[in-house]
Length: 148
Length: 417
Image 1 (cartoon, helix red, strand yellow):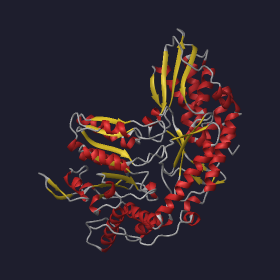
Image 2: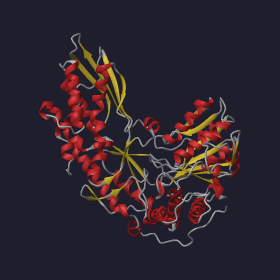
Image 3: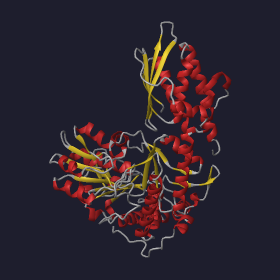
């Protein structure tokens, strides 16, 4: 693989792209939001089930996108189940910081570290953050969010 | 003003000699020699254009049309000479029919805001095609919102061909304007303009052609086509960015109200009322992109210096070669398969999204476009999120096509593991 590509396209990315976790629509979701990347036209809809204590009990997503956006959203769903809204928001912030190239403790991000190579590809950061922006919107009040 | 013929003798077409004219082609990208196949987005510039721009900013530069001094006269002359060159390039009857604008987008907006607002009433129809770039959709939507006009869309086949029967059915005495592209920027389809224009004129509609993807690939004769408006951009035809052309028939332009008001476009101004300059100046408010226009003139000279049939043949061969090689890869589908195409090969892979293809090719030094190509309605019609698009210019080579195909092979390898 050419320079830098192996950092971007790690095996875990291919795995989650081929077999996205928590794909589909969530019946009984009480939060949802759509993320849209006008640059490429990619869309993702995220469904959450939050219990009364503010814990994410279940999560699903549907949409189409590139390997980076699908894998990022899929990895995100894995990381979120069982987290409180506050924990999810903190994770969003850490992930966002990593994308922006800020100095973050990547160990804290677990499997999401696989996406750290994206920061070297500025045109692909919006792909990696599409599902996360949808999460951010869903945790606030839902609706549609654009990466622009 | 008369259209001028600038370059009488054709230079033999030799792609290696052509490549030497384009400094930007000779660079390494991520450790590989650049293969630039994003020409439909914007093309590189030959030394002749770059030198012209440098010359005018370095020496004969001033504002145009109002200076009494030497530099202003020199610069005004060069600016108007450029207008003459463009007129001759597209066979306009008169250089006054050439309006300098920022690009195709501004040209279309100009027509929508002047001809459109004057002639389109509630219930009147504007006809566009499913192949259009957003810039030939949105200005008409905005016009319809303002006037109560109705936008109708000519459908396209799965192969990317306009349904001409449907077009002729959609035409009626309510049709005020037909706005279609000459060459599809996403698929490369060349539209049958003569038939479209004749049919539109038969019901009394005017026709605007988006020529952004056409003028540098094929000879355009606006008188022979009999189109009412023809719009194109400088930067896709080896000229500068920020400069483009609206051609309009003189009688139409004369009857149209101005769009932007300001200096240059007036005859006399008082606080009570102003009167407007004659065409083309009526539509060129403010200081124009002077050196851009002169640079566009240099691009016209450059293109015209070749046997254009030989250039078109070369570009067609590249497209055919790429179609053949890519089309033979299992898991790849060419999008846009009509017989009559120009310089564009769009494709999708079963296993990889266009954005992944674009990123990976870039790491091998190959520049392509990935996405919806500003044709979201067309992509929806074809049930695609986007495509990967390779678009060819006169300076591309067969070995670059082979590099592209090898790069796509690498993508497939990565995504198939």
